[in-house]
Length: 478
Image (cartoon, rainbow, N blue to C red):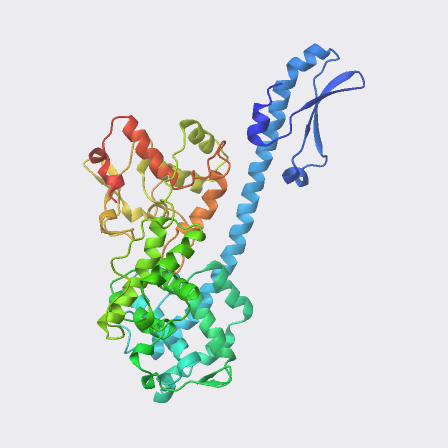
């Protein structure tokens, strides 16, 4: 028999056994699917006692059994995805309940400080990367941090508007904190940690028995990274930046502190940059990623220079080209792999999203956030209007034409997809997790063939068809 299919699908090759005068084809059920069947082997009769005829029928019967295993495997993926969705949905609802409490309390207490709306529905309003939202989250973090650790500014002012923080912190159970840590990322992750520490602090201006005095008594040259980081993140530099950029910078700076120690900023030198780069290289980071981490630290040191904490930023004119391998590009899918992907039993929502990705070249989050209001038409040509959307950069605010092969469902209102949003107002995290389960089933998949490979795949298909970049600028503006 042809065992090629068995190798590709990771199924056992079939065997031919004579039972009561007739030959039967046997296929062992894979361990991962045993719980879906009553027996460990699937048996089908060839209907003949002639060995030669039985061998001729074996291949077709084997393929039929493999198809049955395929069908059950797809059902299992769908069931698992549905169960995961229900579980995540419950957790996300609870997350928004917690966040709503904080939003309500702080909007009431800081009504004079906020330039945004005085009533906030976090499920809706936190979708958008607005300045007031970042402002609100910054106030929450700063208030919690000062109450938990510093105590020399807020508590000294005896301002009643801060007194609600401890009851809110006390309401966070360990399960609630884990929810923030597992499902969501900074600033919620930082906020949760701070609040749990605030709730467990016996006195507001002490920690582990140490008394914290006024940091103004310290010499500026002795200021450590950790003590300056909150002020740096709260500076005007970040007013017009996306929250995602700010939280990524904090993560990278804290990584530097873990490697180099909590140094006084005045004692940092170029060797610390190279040591940090070497450590990131050991962790498998690419050269581009290493430069991004070092750049985050360098930006903070520039701020320190501008504010008189150091004389000169030492993280300038660095030579980092030797650290880390070049970033590996994604590999496109072959036409056969695309056919296999779209032949899967895809749910309607995932099929539509994949069709949009492969036919327009849009990024995942751009597509997952689409609303019906963005579906427009001009001169008979339908297009997605991303000019006012939450996109990667200014050049990505564009109009994306819809090809004839893409058929949208009957027009509705609101969003095209119901993927849940994270605190940054993006939906790619949830959509990626669901679609990745189907990408894994693509036969002969290379490790660098991932969901984002669809974008490069379309570029290659268009190039092979003689369509130049200018001819499809709507889909591929950077």
